[in-house]
Each structure stands twice: as C-alpha cells, then as structure tokens.
Length: 323
Length: 219
Image (tube, rainbow over all chains, first blue to last red; front, side, top):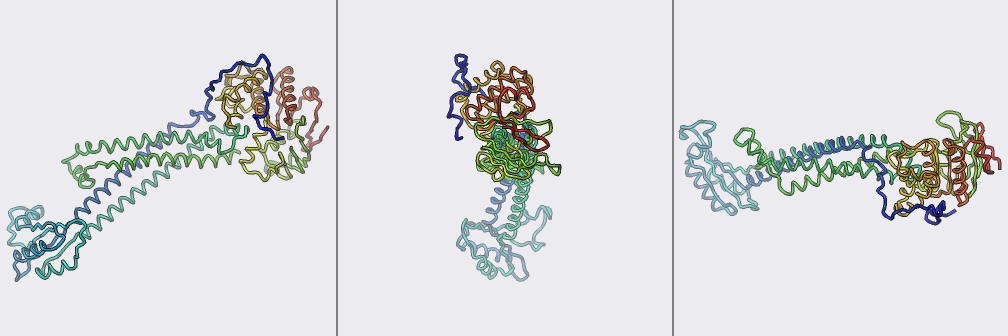
C-alpha cells in the first residue's frame, strides 16, 4: 500500500446532496488556544527582567563613557611639582622648569600656578588669609600634552630634576589605573547582574512553559494521535512564547529607554543638591548616546529570543515526558 | 502490514497482561478484536498505535521494526494510522469541523483543499448541522461520531477503533459499521475492538479474541 491522501476521490459520494461551500478559507481556531497560556504573568516577568537588564546596561554604558572621558582628559596632562628646599630659589626653579617644558616637543600649553593660585587651591583645607611665605608650599606646573604624543617620561623627569632637584613629574598613571579598575569593576558588576537577570528569565520562562504544557496536555496528546511530530507541536507553542517574550521585551526595553530619555530632565531637578552633584560628577550628563539606545533595543530582542529558546528547550523535554 | 511475534506486555513490575502474541494483520483486511473487559484490548490497540512499547517480542508495522524507530519516524507512521478512542479525545476549543479536519491541518494542507471532503463526511455521520458546534455541547453519540470522522478523514492505511459504537443507538451503530466497511473497501485495514456481539454478527469478519492475555484467532 503506497497511497497518499491526495491520490483518491471523496471518501463518501453524497451525489446531489453535496454541500455547496465557498472557496474562501474559514478562519480556523489556533491549535493551541492563546488563553490557555498564562500570558500576562509571563509578559510582566519578561518586561521587569528586560527593564532591569536595560537599566543595568544603560548605567554601565554611562559609567564607561564618563570614565573614558575622564581618562582622556587626565591622560593629556602632566603635573610637575617643585618643592621648596633650603638653599634654592623656588620661583627661579619653577620658571626654569616652565621654560624647559615650553621648549619640549609635544607640549601644547604650560600653566604654572602662581603663589596666589596655589593658596587658592589650599584654601578648602587651610582656610583663607594665610600667608604662604610661612609654609613650604610646592609650586605646581600643569602641562597639556598634544593628543597622541608618546612622551619620553624618563627623559623628561631627568631634565626637570637637573633644573630643579626637588621637582617631581606626575603623569597621573596611578590615578588612571585606579579609574580603570573602578570602571572594570562596574562593568563586571553589570555583567553579573545581567547574567542573574537572564538566568531568572530562563527559570521563569521554563516554569511558565511547563505550566502551559501541563494545561494543554490533552491537546498535545491529540496532536500525537493525529501524527503530529514534536517539532510541529513545539512550534505551535513556540509562537505564543515568542510573542509573549517580544511583548515583555518591548515593554521593559521601552520603559527603560523612556527612563534614560527623561533622565536628563530628572537629573536637572536634583542639580545643586549634593546627590545631584555626585551623580553629575560620576555619570556626566546622564544622557545615553544613540548607540546606547541601539544596545538596549538589541538587548530587548535578545531577551525575547532567550524566552523563546528557554521555552523551546522545556517544550521538547516535556514532549518527551508526555509521549 | 502488521506483524506481532512473541509479543508480551506488562505495566511496571506487574503481571504480564499480554502474552506471546503472534499474529498478522494483512493489508485491506477487516477484523474485530474482542474479549472480556480487562482482557487487554485497549493495551493491544495502544501497542498497534505505538503509544506503548512491548516489554518483549517483535512488533513490525508497515515493514518496520518499531523498536528501531525514532520519535519523528513514529509520528510519520501515525499519520498512516487512524484511531478512535473510548474517551473520544476531541479538542474542546475547536469546532466539530476543525476537530475532524485536524489530521489534514497537521499534514500542512490548505483548508480549501479538504473542506468538501470534511463536510461530506460530517454529513455522512449525521453531524452536518453540528459542524460549528464545540464538543462540550455535543452529546456522547455526536462526540463519538466526530472522533470516528477524525480518525477516518485522511483515509489511513490502518484504522483502530476502541468500542466505536458504544455510545450510539443500533441504527447509527449500523451506519458507522457501514462507514468502516466502506473505508475497508477503499484499502484501509480495520481493527474494531468491541464486545458488542450484535455489531460483530452484522458483518462476517475475522475475529481476534483476547482471553487471559492470549490471543485466539477465528478466521
């Protein structure tokens, strides 16, 4: 026997009783009813998870961008301190170092701090009205380096020390290193939170899928009876879960994008307050670049895809149990 | 078409409920499967439908040793088998029409390509007026007819029916038997599990009798 279902005529010939049917296709009910899947709870879970993930990613992007900005600013400066020592004229040493720095290739600008300016810098700690003549206050010279210039720091140090033995040259490397490790820690914490969010999403989705499969077990059994394979059955469920995942992703990601979109104006409400100033110092303008919004959108799609994949994995495992 | 060799079946660690089954179901054949309640008729049908695996022995279906088949191959084989179960197994959220058309839908066919066939069959089994009704509002007999229509609509190579006339009056029972006979004439091998002697007396066919887990065949 090698028939196919299309090879033969009608099973029963009703003759003139044959019903007249229109050529237009009927609207068929979905094989898996949408209402049988606890959709709202899952959409809420995915939306919350996507929102948390988006906030984490957005904050990490903000911190990274601000840190990169600080680093580039700080890395383009060199600070030279000339300390007062007995037997040497501090002003003359400072002027000699400033002149030598001016002549140095790759230095764009020299800004020697005067005695008054140095006093101003110390004012927050020592108060005003202080006579610096009575204190051994070092003189500070800030040199701005042309971007992309690789200075021979050892040579520069030797040259400066020859002119002023008590001088020290600081290229802020230690501070930049600290910044780098702080940024790294922030990114790492962000990645950790993202991983937790994704794991929680997978677990929630797996439970929801199992629940949906249990509720629809009679449908799965009937589909097996009529010869549907696991792939066919899984695809009927998967569509629902992909839709639910996308809904959750769009809601969570959208709210997070609105949050970042309005955060600039929210931050302005707090400007002038200690908290607002700290945030402004840490995160700059609090505004996400267009690439950041793209990253958030991609993340929402990723979470929807994870929802579908986790659901698919659970579906096949459950189908194995049911058969 | 179907070959059983020394097949035995037990559930868990319980006693063997089917023992040393040896039989052939030839293509185009018609047979009744009978025996007292609890004799294992439904279990044997489930073995034939591949929803149970034998504890021992060889089951060969459409020329294939079923112990060697993967899930996808089993699904493909099931497309060639129609089954009517005692509890009907209709999908409550689908209309009678949609339930009967389900095998075609699973095959991926367009609705317009099978609609006439489904409607013809529904009229034949007396459900022409109930096409758009949902199973919860159908009577037991109507559900049974819908389940039978679903099993035969794709004209399977093998039809398994478990007490298919249990919930219908004698007149409709005869009509349904005629449907099975018509189907058999178009090439489907039919196995009807029943203990309805009146039904069996209406058609002269081979009888497979299960008794105490063993099968006796009366040609």
